[in-house]
Image (tube, rainbow over all chains, first blue to last red; front, top):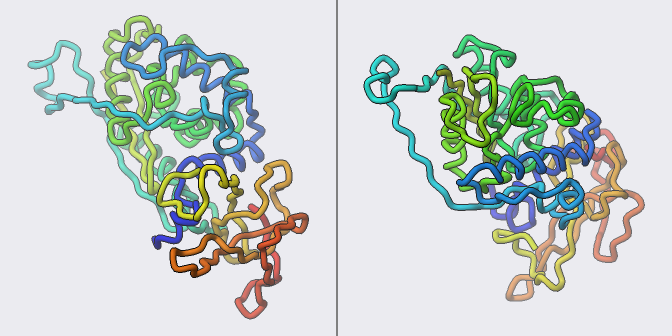
Length: 260
Length: 99
């Protein structure tokens, strides 16, 4: 990609997410209130997470009225670059019980890269054909590898570098049909006590985005939830299967399915 | 103002927010492009757009650096020099749709 792309102001991930979201809201009837609900939930969950960067709840009106960054996304609908680190101890599943009383097993781990012509970040052009994006491909392959479907997932972590991303990723990862998110958010289905809790640790919105560490942060949080060690933000119902999803430049996505 | 690599000769004081979109060249492809319009209320999906060449910045030696953008009919920008997309490029008409 030539220098012209960045110099003329096109190499900005925030713009990509805003453009994708504009189209998505137009096509599937998602409202600004839904965006604010996602951010509000993130900060509520962040307030229950001692490792979070944003730990103060912020109301929907303040979220909607904060500084406009890329229409329709305001400051509090975005995460922020941050520093952070996560370490995981990994071993063969057959010997995991030697080291950990409550091991979490990796049932699927999939990475997919952009297909030619798909609508992805830093895309100078997009095909007129409808080509599956990296997230959709990674998700589908992960379900096949794990031998489960979206209905089997008890708790999920979805890339939420901005509030609309969480909404779009809910559908791209198979958890609902496009457009259903509006009602799901209104009914609180993705809150800690909802049908499918999403980003229980506050996600990128509350934890910031230390880029490469975000995927492991998700796995750490899901492991805590599956072990029942998430303390004040523990989801009820003894969750058994967890799901993580990240997406990043220049159009790559990774999904894991975890089971206790 | 966007951080580097954005390079426009603007300063924080002179920076003007700009529009960005994907414009469909009918039957061919959708391309990412700056838009001369920066008011979201004046941009509609499916609106007819027209290619526009504008001055993006000046190099240290004074060289004028030009860039492409797309404008809608209602746009008036003094520095924009619009040009119709030629039929010989294979595209059906001189206009394109904002996607």
